[in-house]
Image (cartoon, rainbow, N blue to C red; front, side, top):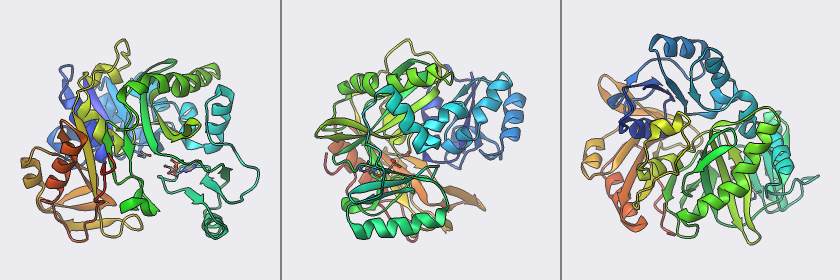
Length: 396
Ligand code: AMP
Ligand code: GLY
């Protein structure tokens, strides 16, 4: 199989890494990729939002399967354009990707499917959660416990000039469960946890995600099939019933409340950085799976994985560009996996190029071992302003 991965972050590097271990892979390409992906795949300077150029590239390279990493091109219809031209894609149509692209559409589908989620509230009053309706890269949600928090949230939201949605505030630990789906058929990955806030102890603003780990101490791998049946499958049936079947990765962001598991959100693609901790646990071949062969359950290694994100100094407010990065080889020499999230090469030198710069993945027999492997490797990497959380998987 000739596979093309679309995207340029740590998630896409993890996908490329996992695909590159497959016996069914003949050629691996990426658009645009990044310096880390370039060690595994041929990278082509085509952006993820340039649909016309991606279609031409896939045809030129006689690609058998396109794997789309980020949500924006899916919501904008990239998978439809590729399928329309007879190119197989892992990723949903624009109509099915609305499950992520519009919070109000997602709520409507969940209600119709009878999936447990936070109640929609008619007015904004604390405690509540306010969400921008459209895509916001994890930065369009305000948890309002007090009147002050609500007022400042409403002030920020005004600047967006976008519809928003108000819902019940849920309490409990969060988890992510991914399902590979083809219409109504689906198989589940084990639960993973990500850390959305910038600071230790979940302090500071929301980010795209500062770390992740799997397996979880409080929700066993073995619970994934039941979550699949109660959360993902009803939504997949409802989307199919509407004539917009979902093909690709259906990501459920969940909260384990006192009343059971509730859906916080759905996403239409692999999560970042959970994917970085899940794919290194996968023993099954990723290529047939993403090509739609769901005949077997996923095989998972018993090992644990912990991912620590190294971000630029001003993240999440501003990206960092051009700062030299040292120590990646030394980190890799410890046995950790170093995935590139926002890097570039300038005159042959690795430099920062984004908000989240590198993802350091430690593996071990237990979460504790994986955690110290990740932090040990991360300590060997340096760039000016580098920040990371020091409590990833500490609660495990
Ligand atoms: P989302 O973009 O919908 O995943 O929301 C980002 C984060 O906001 C989630 O990971 C939760 O930490 C928090 N959040 C979203 N919805 C709720 C809710 N209904 N109750 C409590 N926290 C929430
Ligand atoms: N891990 C959060 C996300 O991918 O949206």
